[in-house]
Image (cartoon, rainbow, N blue to C red; front, top):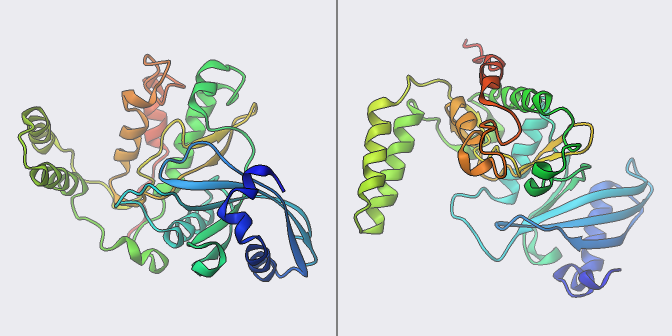
Length: 288
């Protein structure tokens, strides 16, 4: 066991965690060979786990990630059980996302809810993607691949019983979002004239609604994994909701997520000229 694990709640509950994993995996026994915290994830806490399983279909070495709540919290973040369900739905739609393995909502195991997913290769660090040209493979192809992943996410449309926690989808996602942001400002109790002007502009120029479909709502550089060949996984599903598919593309192209390459509007990895290619990949779901 590493020193970092010895200082963590996982060390204090190592036996309980190994027992849970053994039962969940249908194994005779599970040993946590290594565990260490992963950087990033200000809202959630992520731990790299190297597991040895004896017996069952996962027998052998399993490289996994345990995801649980961090001390910080954001009210609109989904619970770990909801995120686990979203990962399963995304994978069933063909999205390149980590495989969700086991969910535990019993606080007796490590003190809070968590789930375990299979680890994916690569890095999500934006500073590396911006500076290391060999990462992500061909950047135009990477942008096209990200567009294809968005299309798969957006192929999920309500109603979906397993996503009932998302609530009823909005009939006009753009106007619904504008009203929500206006309420946020009102609750602050101070005047923000520039923001109010911006919201009014959006209200007057809102496009005709599309969807509603499943949105990732944090689809951006920094929330996907790449290696030298290309994309390896889409991460961080805690903000998903029903809405207009173009909002995911807009967030992906926001200037704040271009990092060292503001001239490459598509996430800092490709020019905006690729956007028609990204958009054409979206196909509205068939209606009964």
